[in-house]
Structures are given as C-alpha cells and as structure tokens.
Image (cartoon, rainbow, N blue to C red; front, side, top):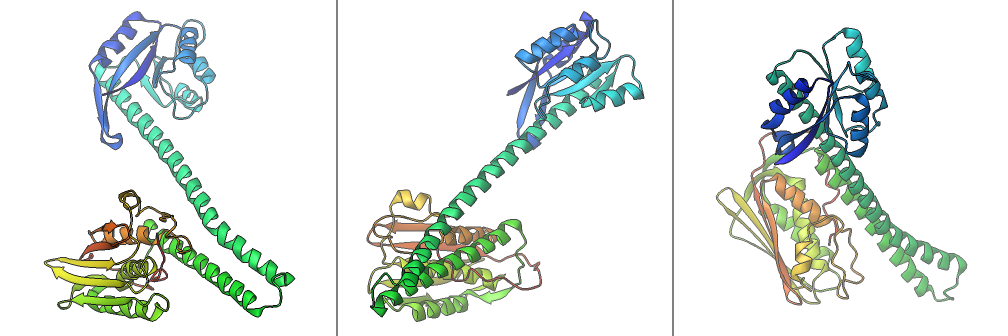
Amino acid sequence: MDTLGVMVVDDEAGMRLGVQRALRDFTVRLPDVEGDFRFEVAQAETGEQALEAIAENPPDILLLDHKLPGISGLDVLSRLPEDEGRMLTVMITAYASLDTAITATKRGAYDFLAKPFTPDELRGVVRKAAKHLLIQRQARRLAEEKRQVRFQFISVLAHELKSPLSAVEGYLRIIRDGSAGDDPESYNHMLDRSLTRLEGMRKLILDLLDLTRIESGQKQRDIAEQDVVEIAREAVETARAGDEEKNLTIELHADGPAPLKCDRGEVEIVLNNLISNAVKYNRQDGRVDVTISRDGDTVTISVADTGIGMSPEDQDRLFREFTRIKNEKTRGILGSGLGLSIVRKLVSMYGGDIGVQSEPDVGSTFTVTLRDASEQADGGDNQQSAATADDA
C-alpha cells in the first residue's frame, strides 16, 4: 500500500491531533490509478515552521489554517513553490467567507474547509484531494511518456529516411557530374537503385499513414461477408506476378470457402504483408505455402516459407514498430519495419492473434487467426495504401 504525506498547519494542538487521529487508519482506494493509499500526517503550528518543513520534505497534501500566529495561511500559500502537481493545499479556517475563498484560490489553494468540521468531512476532502493529485500526476507521467515515444518515433523515422535520401543524392551527383565514365550501363544501374530507394520511401510513408489511421481510430471500415480464400487467391497471384528473380513456387491450400465478416482491404493488408515477407526473405527456388481454413467462428491464415528463418531472440521483437531483422542474410533487403506491426494491430481488431514459428536457414511460418468483425461499419472510402507494405 502506498503512502501519501499530509501536513496539518494549525496553532491549536487539539486540531492537529484530531486530524492525525481521523487520518490514522484512513485508506483510499482509487481505481483510476490502480492502488490503495494510506496517509502519514506531519504537524506544524506556525506558518514559518510549515515553510521550513515543506522546503525540506514537501507533503502531498497541505491542510493549512488561515489564522496563524506570525504569517497567515494566505501568506504561506503565496510563498509556496510553484510546482504544479507536486502538492495540493486545502485551506482551513473558522472565518469562512467568499473573499477569503477567492483569495486562497487565486494563490493556488485546491479546496476550502470551514471549521468546525467532522472527521467524515475531513476525510471526504482528503479523499477528493488525493484523487485529484494522483490523477494529475498520472496524466503528467503519461504525457511525458507520450513525448518520449514521439521523440523516439521521429528519431527512428528520420534515420529510416536519411539513408535512402543520401543514397539517391549520391547517385544523382555522380550522374550530374558524369564521374562514372562513359558506360551507360553504370548510369542505368544508378537510376534503377535510386528508383528502388524512392519506392521504399513511398511505402514507408504509406505504411505510416495506415498505422496512424488504425491507432487513431479514424480508419474507415466497410464490414461485409467476404471469402478469405478468394482474397488470398488474389494475393497469391499478385505475388507470383512480382516474383521475377527467385523462381519461387507459391501455392494456395484451402478445402473450401472461408467466409468472414470483415473489411476486405484490411484482410488484403494482412495477406499481402505476410506473403510479401515470405517472398522477400526466401531462398532461390524456394516455396511459399498459404493455407486458409475456417473452424467454427475462426478463420486461420498460415503462410509458410523456406527462407532464411529467425532466431528466438529476433522472433521476440518482431512485431514492434520499425523492427527489422538485420544481419548478413538480410543485408540489401528493403523494408519499412512497420508491416508486421500493422498486421498485429489489424488482427487485434478482429479479436484474433498472430504468431510465428521459425528456424534459421529452414524457414518461417506465420499464423493468424481472425473472427467476425462487428456488424457496425463506417461508410466511405476504405484506405488500402499498405496492401503491399514491406516489413521486418
């Protein structure tokens, strides 16, 4: 159980002891911040003592009497450090008035409690202050985490774009200066490499747009019953047409239709990502086997390849944003590192799961399960820009 510090500042010893007794065994359960909290009470009888104690060890909640010997409670309030979210002040006074309340609020008081008050009234005010304080701290913590995530995201994105831009710039300078000699083939190769790099950047940007739409909930969906086998057949044909180098055998296996209430574009993204990865990371003359089945309310998609495979360590981090498996075998294979992250987020929208079994130099098998999507659908254009997104 966590502890919140309370300091009561009052020149009446009976009042200080009464607050201490009322809060001694008092605990607060706050579901919003997932925890139970107890209170540890410190005392001060003057404003000067309070300021010294606060400077050394500030409490979480300050119960501050208005009328004190020496400087007043309002004077103490005006001298407190401005650190939003660090401490909340509740003014206590026997001279409750609108003017006093307004002045205290302007100087930073959170709440106002008039004497005489009952133990229950005190505990109610403390409970309210504790909840506000902890939620405020949690919001600041989440905001800071969000800033850190944004910074890391932008840093990785800048790195992913910097490399291809530098490569294209280098090729263009060589072509402009004619420093590669008189062989046209050298320049054609540079142009081809530049176009490949630009295509990779375009796919990265489209993947980012899809990821943003999904995470923000702004992706429009058109839910209808579709045959996943038919969608897979089109994805397999597209992969066959694009396989000009490795001479792969790409086969679809299904015992019959696999109906699913889904957004067709979303299932296309899932299949195209899995199949394109199986092609990219495969070996010469290898195989890609796509298996579709339906059992009860679940459609299962399995994509197996005979490619380079992955170690268990690589598998553990595979579905994170911008994660690409980098080693000697993947050198020269382009990808955004977002495709499998997008697939995982889409699969979760269907109450499903995604997993991988892999062995280095043997191959990988990705398995996805999908269940019928909600009947409600958002009309409008369905964005399918990541249908051929690269990954890993």
